[in-house]
Image (cartoon, rainbow, N blue to C red; front, side, top):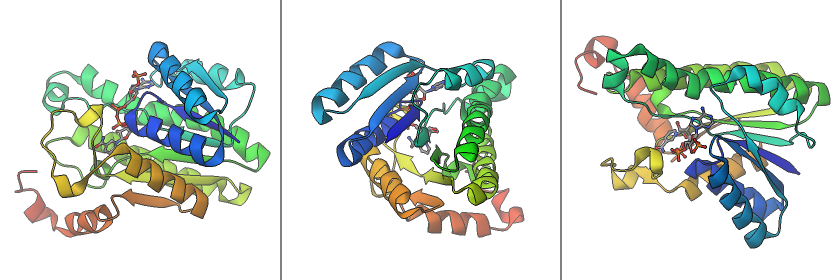
Length: 243
Ligand SMILES: NC(=O)c1ccc[n+]([C@@H]2O[C@H](COP(=O)([O-])OP(=O)(O)OC[C@H]3O[C@@H](n4cnc5c(N)ncnc54)[C@H](OP(=O)(O)O)[C@@H]3O)[C@@H](O)[C@H]2O)c1
């Protein structure tokens, strides 16, 4: 089995790489911008799990390179995990739209661009699994992070549509909706202990969703209910909240 991980320097992605390597003895294909960091991860996977591992240069924000990136892969993937993204800075994005655009492109446009290429191949092969990491932040826009939230909302809607399109081809599409995860993205943030998980927990949930062919997962599961309540708050009340 070949697992392609896009944005493989992400802490969640690397935990997922370890999970697929240890459980399925899969060949792991790591792609991201920082190749040096990827090489270290590759060595670690090979030593620890005795699997095949490969490294590729990939930039989600360069959509014009996505078709040639995919065409150059000699082993087309059975499983693709999309894990790249940036949180950005909401206040900075309000002052400078180029920063907002970077956040939108790294979380949404880049994912849609590479997934269109991958979807066409998997659709033709009538097999495969696409796993996209979105966020609960995309479930309802809040003043503190609505640029990131709207990019993730776009990604969630995109994955839903893709799942609908690929269902008849037998291609699985999984939407992963994490809440708070302890990674370099959330470093220095004061997160509530009971609602914050380690990347390994997200990786276990992703792998479980893959095995059980689940379409949408919240990780931690409790976020499904938290977001249900948040989405039920009437807009005239929501608009006054300092969220
Ligand atoms: N941590 C959380 O609480 C949380 C919650 C909900 C959702 N998520 C989502 O989970 C995913 C993984 O996040 P994480 O927490 O594991 O964050 P992370 O450790 O900060 O990883 C994010 C990775 O994205 C990669 N990346 C950024 N821009 C890219 C681009 N243009 N092209 C290719 N790679 C790019 C970076 O790779 P390089 O180092 O190679 O540049 C970076 O290692 C993200 O989509 C994030 O939005 C995280």
